[in-house]
Image (cartoon, rainbow, N blue to C red):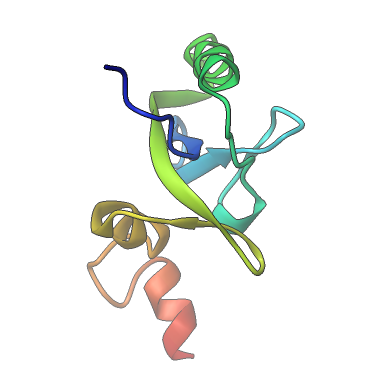
Length: 101
C-alpha cells in the first residue's frame, strides 16, 4: 500500500553563496522558507524537483523537504529543516546574528 503524499517544498543550497534556498511558485529561489511553494501533489513535486536539478549552475543538492501550511506560508516539519532555516550555527555569522541585533 502506498503512503499518502505529505506537503513539501523544494530546497537546495545556492551554488555561489552556499545559503539554503527554497523554490518559489514562480520557479525562482528565495532564502525565506515562508516564500517557498508548498507542493501538495506528488507529481507536481517531482516536476519541480526535476526543474531544480536542471539548474546545476545555480543550486546544488536539491531535494523535497516536508513542510506544512502556516499562517505566513510554508513551515518546516522536521528539526533538520528548522535548523536549516536559521542559517549557519557558527554565531555570530549568518541569519542567527540578525535575530540577536
